[in-house]
Image (cartoon, rainbow over all chains, first blue to last red; front, side, top):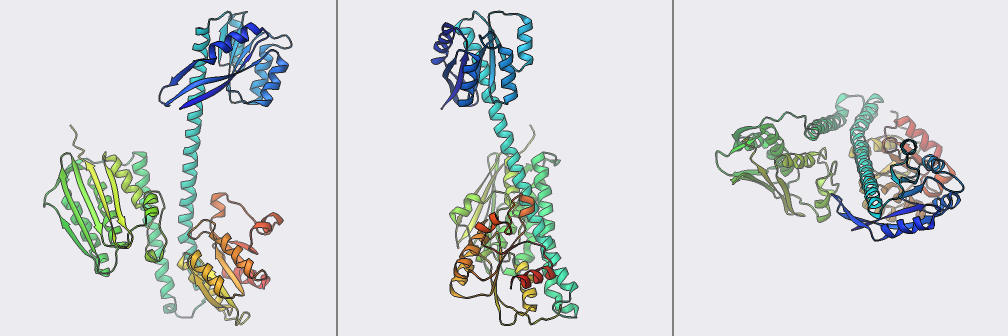
Length: 377
Length: 133
């Protein structure tokens, strides 16, 4: 990859301009960590007037500015550049090299300073420094902007997700207030039931959100100990047996009675609860959930398969993003925060691990996790 | 809420992917005398617009697509230019997504007659409908 920076050389001496252009025309260098080379496109201006005209028509990245020009001086042009808010760096060139000039130029926004006469090598060193600064500065700005955007988007969606249940509950309360479907409390059983379901969903969302923020910020105190992973599985099975019973889903576990693993048991509970709960929620009546777990070298290999509704290829792609929930006939009435899998992904990253999904629409889904032993050496 | 017969015999299409909002809107509209037809997604709603005739439509903005409500309004108005359409959403405030179906600019592309924020009270909805019909 190649990044062309546009350089404007401003000097009233044609020889100086030509010399600088010649030196930079064939100059190219790689920028560390960015994976591309920088080279230059060059333009020339012989006076302040010409410089201003060129600035109007082009977008320059670097300006090499002579301090003494026939119709103006460099400091005035520096002032023009600063007021214009251009995204560029200026290098001052002058034969009257004095510390005062250098200081005042830098104060007025020049990035660097070249004392005339200079060699092509000296010119290249200074231009290279300016280029690297410019490229990294722009990259940092881009990243900060992206981060800001992602955060904004997350918060927008989050407030939407929180407002939806509030609106629903408020709506039911207003209907009750107006006695819209009858005088007896029993007339409102369905409304009360739905309100409670929405409150439950909201609570789950808030808890998931707390988990996610704690993991993201690194503030969740991790308690790394050796424990039996089979216990985490059994605990999840116990928790979800009633839900499985309602749909007549059979859960089985294949693995040893004792699977010693170093990690945070709390995090393992989050993993197991999310996987098993999904496997039941998105299962069909009379379906099955199969859990396997085993150690393989330094890794724990875990899989949870269901015989549920499965995922379409385009759904698989978006599966791990925040608040992604697929609305279709088969997911009608299934509640969820849309954060569970984001949390799983974050946790498996904490374990230098990976999470994979295989799925066939209408047939079922298998989540496979690999988690590295966190034994402190 | 008293049963009113203001809109007896009129048919309304309500589309929302939130089953609770659908239920609540239906209760309010039924109390006004409307016959309710409902759909939970854009595809289903499009098929209904195609086949049936309505006297009023209430669309949620975000269904399976972020602009489902706009699309439905457009298709609905193309078939029934004179029938009022109410667009409902909870998204405007927090996304900064601002549009107004009342301004001339908004009217030119939003094919709905009113835009309402979710969390609307039954009385407000009733008032808007009486104004439109």
